[in-house]
Image 1 (cartoon, helix red, strand yellow):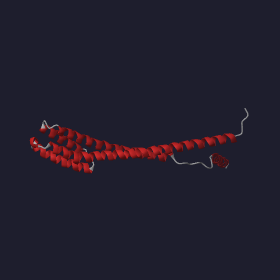
Image 2 (tube, rainbow, N blue to C red):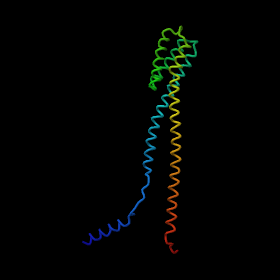
Image 3 (tube, rainbow, N blue to C red):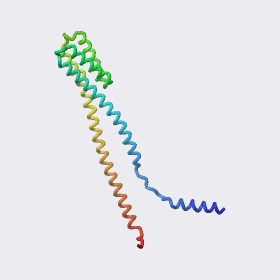
Image 4 (cartoon, rainbow, N blue to C red):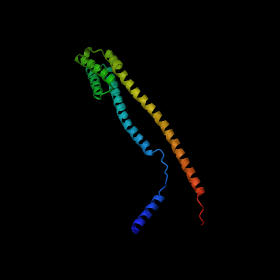
Amino acid sequence: MRILLALLFSVSMFVEAQPQRRFVGPLPANAEMSIKQASEQLAAAKDAVEKNIAVLVHLRTADAALADAMQPENAIQKAFEEVEEAKRICPDFFVEQAIIKMSRELEAARRSPMSADFGRLRSLLHDNALVPASSVVVRDASRLEEETLAWLRVQELISAHVRSLSELASQGLKAAEGARPSRPQ
């Protein structure tokens, strides 16, 4: 019986020691989770942007190869290899369609490199592959710039929120300090 009373007394003391009302504000863990999700999305976007830039680099290298018509067989072979490498990267659908078309044109030119029309090949490469590939890279860069601006706005909001939290905490501590009875020293 004494043990039961002692147990009840200690439980009641423990319950009274706990604060009755606790302030629960927005959880920083939710913000942290959002940041982690954004980081994962950034990794995926980074892969896509790097892939599209690599495609553009290969197409520009193919164009540079076609600019040197002094050795037609080597120029066409180099351009063909670069276009095939760009195709291997699995670019954007419309860019891939243009690359396939260009690959066929270069394959036909490889059969008779001495009679190949390098001006026409470069024009086809430029209009059908380089322009769409450049557009995809510009589209990606524009989206990233928009997202950068959005994150800057979020950063400003977070900064204002942290400043408000700090001010509220400071006001609470100052108010609590004035309410405490002074202790004799």
